[in-house]
Length: 460
Image 1 (cartoon, rainbow, N blue to C red):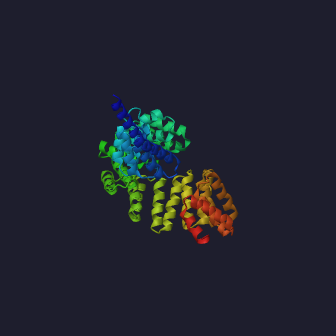
Image 2: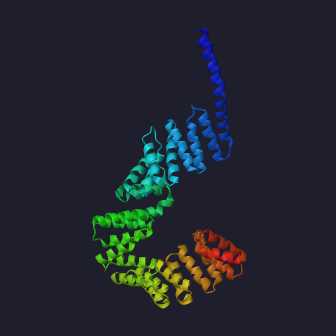
Image 3: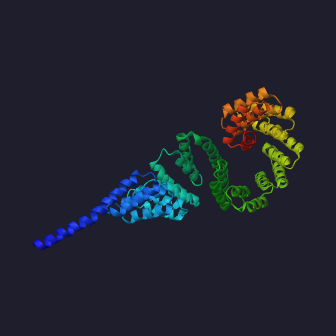
């Protein structure tokens, strides 16, 4: 009896002698993982520790996180897979596992992992947000909305998520969309301008009896807030509901241009065949030709639109712009002036007339300055109108007045790059290099390429 016990004891001691150094080195690796500053080194230490401490398979997940932060996504994927096989992948681990596949240009695999993670006990609500994004990218808008609704149930104070949900719901549930959009703007006022635009579009759509036109109006609203992928989905559904809806085809052509589609012209031709008298169809065709550089065809389309809607000043502005690009500055000026007569109480058209004079340095004193002054009179708090007036006063050599007006413009909108640029030109003309430099820096940082060019020229 003693002999077997003695043998067992010896074997146990041998086991301890062999395994303790391995385990001890595993804990040493773990300490080093926590102390190093490099994510790659930390990942290697975590992985080594996991191999030497078999009852800590969760260390594979920590290795995955470290590889994730080091942007070594394939290694992170392998580490998360080891944690999963050992039943040690946490709820956040499922999120991260999908993330590294998504970042490694494997969106389908990422979606599969996130979907699988939902079936685990106590899944992370972040999975719903990730899936919503993936579904939307795949144009599965209904599934995207469902996923985001589940996420918002837990994160009711997440304004961007509620805004995204509202956008998705515009395609299927007007009332729910409005509710989410309003909640988003209440949580974060930065969403308010877009929400007001969408709210107006959805309310207008609800007044139309045609399901196809309701989608067209909704899509136009989505386009106004630069959500062209969703707008395209609305227009595609609109033409399915009514293949003879010329405006739906025309707007689908417009959306194609904003979403890298290749059938824009075909859709616009279809729209023209269905209704050549539609001002909307003609106007959108004009925009298409303008973008591809065919200004003569654009002019023809805008003139056709103006014949259909002779009281719409927007068409006259488009005609003026086309004449300007064709080099006929006189006819362009006449078109801008006619737009003002059609809308004598709208500051925007006086500002556009004034801006045309400034851009081409024509009729500054007799047309440009009076038009800009009228624009400011009608909209005294509009920084764009003040900027154009200041610019024209500068061109007219009235430096003191120009500076006062331009400073008002930047006070109302410090992010207005053009006003900073015009101030820089003013200070250049008045030989104030320090002030010129400061304004050029601000204008360049706000996106003005002209300011960047002047900085390189005068302050290399």
